[in-house]
Length: 311
Image (tube, one colour):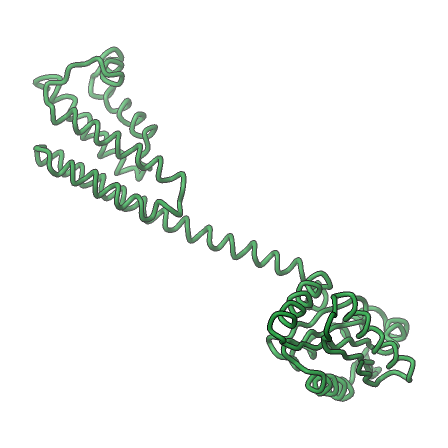
C-alpha cells in the first residue's frame, strides 16, 4: 500500500465485501468483528487498529472519514430497526433512502460506490427478513388463537364448554336489552344414557356422544352455538331466533336422532332425547334464563322423556 489512507480504504472495502458474502446482519458488532479480522490480515498492527477504532488517527482522505461514519450510522440504524419488527418494515426504507441519498451526494470513487451498493442489497435483504419475521409472528398469533379456541372446547365432542356458553348468553342478553334481538336456548338430555354405558361400555357411550354432537352441528346454523353442558346434557344457543323457530329446530333434532341406529358389535340400539326450550324475556339474567330452560327440561323428564317442553 502507498500510504495509510489507501490501506484503510482497502480494509473498509474488503470488510464490506466479507459481510455481504457471509450474509451477516449489518450490525455494529458484526462490522467491528469483520473489520478487525480484515485489518489484522492486511498487516495493521494492534496499536494502529486501536488508534483507528477509538478515533486518535489522522486520516488524510475526508471521503474515507465520511464513509466510515455513514457505515456506522447504517449499522446503528439497522440495530434500532430490529428492536421493533412491526415498525421497521416502513421505517428502514425511509432511513436507508435518506442515508444513501447523502452518500450518493459525496464525491467517492466508483469502487467504493460499488461496495456501498452491496450494503444497499444487504439492507434490502434485511427488510425481506423482517417481513418474513412479521409473517412468522402472525402465524404464531394464529397458533395462540387456535390454542385458546381449543381450550374452550370439549376434547371428546369438539363442542364448546360451559364457560364459553356463559359468554355467548351474556352477549345475547346485551343484544336483547340494547337492540331488542330475541334469542332462544335449547337444553337437551340423552335419555337413559347411563344404561348405554352399563350395557355396551363407555366406548360405545363415547360414540353416541360424538355422533350426537356432530348431528347438532349439522342441523343448526353456523351462527348457532352448540355446547356440551356436562355429561350427556347439551345446550344450543340460537341468536335472533324466537320460540317457535327454536321449537322447529328441537323437533328436527329429535326426529333425526330417532332415525339413527347405533351399533356395538352385532348389537344394535337406539337413543332418544328430552328437550327443554326457552326464549329471552325482560329482566332476564344468565342465571334466570338457564334456570328456566333447566326447569323446562325437568318437566319433559317428569312427563315421560323423549318430549319437548317450552317455558
